[in-house]
Amino acid sequence: MESQSFNLTREKWIPVLDPDFRIQELSLVELFREWESLKEIRGDNPPTTLALYRFLLAIMHRAYLGPTDTDHWKEIFQDNGKRVVEYLQGSQDCFDLFHPTNPFMQDPALPIERAVPVYAIHTMSTSEVFSHEHEWSGYSISLPEAARLLVRLQGVDITSLRAFYVGQDSGNRSAVNTPTMNVANVLLKGRTLKETLMLNLMQYSPENEIPSVVAGEDVPTWETEVGYTGQPKKEIPAGYIHYLTFPWRRLRLFSEAGRVQQLAITMGNSLPEGVEARQWECSVAYKEGKPVRLSLHRQLWRDADSFLLTASKQTRPRIVDWLAELKSEELVNNLVVFEVLGMSADQAKPLGWSSARFSVPIQFVTDLELAQSLKSAIGIAENHQQIFRSFKGSPYFSLAEVLKNGETEKLSKALDGESRYWAILDQAFSRLLHDLPQDNQTVADGITRYGLTTLPAWIKTVQDAARRAFTESIESIRNHQARAAALRTLEWKLAELRADPREKKAQKQKTAKKKQKKEQAVVQ
Image (cartoon, rainbow, N blue to C red; front, top):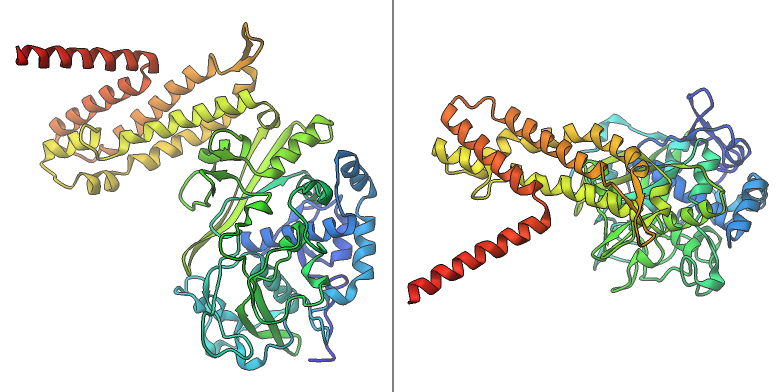
């Protein structure tokens, strides 16, 4: 093993989509020399794709020590990756999988006794959902696959029990979730790989504490004295670059005949108690102080305002703030594509991964009023989902009442009108995104208002979708009396939902006064 070498700067291992939409593997140097013509990174799965992008961004930040401002960003764009190539060629020892003392992202102190078969990585958790191999299969992975696995495990990995580190035989051995787990990780997409990496190259100005405070030397972990080795500990990242390459795991590959069949993995470093990744994280939106979570069953557009708008109790990803800065200097296009990637888990049980995209005019990023109108539109759609709930007075409750079915919640879930509802709205929302910016009017206070025509039309679209979805969901019910009762309740509920808020408030006050008069009459 000591005589082996697989240097990531020269060997082909990063899967990319080429100009002809074919997948090919490139070395790090080749990637930055050809990035203008390449389409995108295409990893083995979305978590690997996400981890590879973050890894490449860390390399860029290190090579350029920026961009410190929009002018520096422009210089980096024009440099076209030359300084990155120089950095990679001058730091080749950091990127060799089998370097005798500094193997890439590994800890040479881990012995083979700590190793498990590569296929067993996920069986160390409470689920074998992603493991389709067995001990007798002789399963192994190629060196390019092994390199991608290392990057993924350091960047996107679940909480699970790991082997004890060298010298340990008791105590905690649970590796923490990496900050990318269970959250909606935003990646801004360009037409080429170069554009995508440049769009996600966050402003980096340590003297201004952007995007974070720098304490000590902020360099990639592979350049530090300790690197990815040593007793796991709680540690605060020195800065943004260190955070992007943080040693969340201790890892070591064991290869034979150019294939990797075993991997040692233990817990790595973690953040101290009370320290949150938010101060370094730039690609995640927050609501109520918590990261917007990744959902495998919820349409991405329902959280679109979280990625576009900073408002009361919500903060969009900081990379989107930087995108607005770039737009103010006319350095980016008028259409922005969001790709949201990630992996979802229930504690130590992996549930799945996802990758979804939506595109919007960049005006949603730069115009607060427009983004607020979009938030209102999404709120209207979310509010109408109560049509499909099981509370007393809901359409499904009325249905169950006539059917003498006491388990209204089970009935509503079985008929599942809500899934139909959101599916119907999918296409309509895409039209709304492009219609809203055109529907504007400058009012007396000089502020441009949006949606005076579009939002009332959207309410009708939402109500039509709710009506259709609910009606279709009860078609299998043969009791016509029950269906009629449910449909009457549906129309009553829709009327209540489309009422103007001011009218609803007046009606509520009117009802309260009537109630008060009745109570006074009883007393007299």
